[in-house]
Image 1 (cartoon, rainbow, N blue to C red):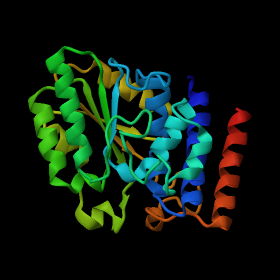
Image 2 (image 1 turned 90 degrees about the vertical axis):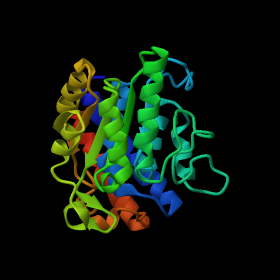
Image 3 (image 1 turned 60 degrees about the vertical axis):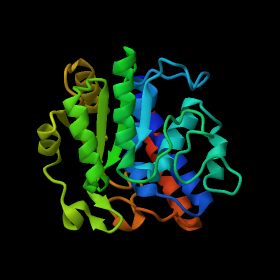
Image 4 (image 1 turned 135 degrees about the vertical axis):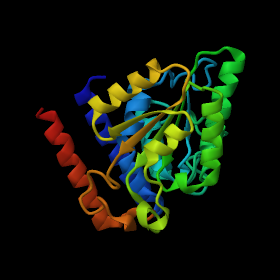
Length: 278
């Protein structure tokens, strides 16, 4: 996909976030919207995956360590063809396979069940080690929240990844600056994030997480890096492209009501129309 196509697809992913959380009357739209461009780049450009064969042996692996942003993950998977986009409306409903957090047993394209913060990166490190031991060339990607990296387990996993020189592992931190209780800086500052990962022997890249050119360059640099895992620190805006959600901590885990749903979808439609004029 070219940059414009990726921008259009990211907008569709954002619509999916709003549709899912609205119909569920629950969920986490803020962090799903901030990570939408990252999900889009990974699933439509970066990763070796096949919706027709979700479990193919040589596929790249993905772990959503911040599992509560499943609405964004599901929207990316659906638009990529792993399951019908229409099913996003069943998010969190009784009997639906689209649970509030990713479930590898029931959702096509999900490689690891996640939700307990801090644990996803450990699973990703395990997958990367497995690839090395088996001499397989698949790559492993994991998305973490910046609030999540306050978990000690994250740094145990990072220490092991650096020690094992896992150059097939890419850790992406969605640095939107907000977590459930407020700003990450006020709750328990993780800054400087880049220096912390560098201390664990990671190759670190700082990017604008909404700039597809920057993301493209970062993932290419990660692929070219040998002997070290890579951490991409992506600066993002929580609630991106929905005006009343942007940079508002209150939208961490609240679903839009009918009026808010209509406004959000209208704003995203306008973004889509503007992209079609480019």
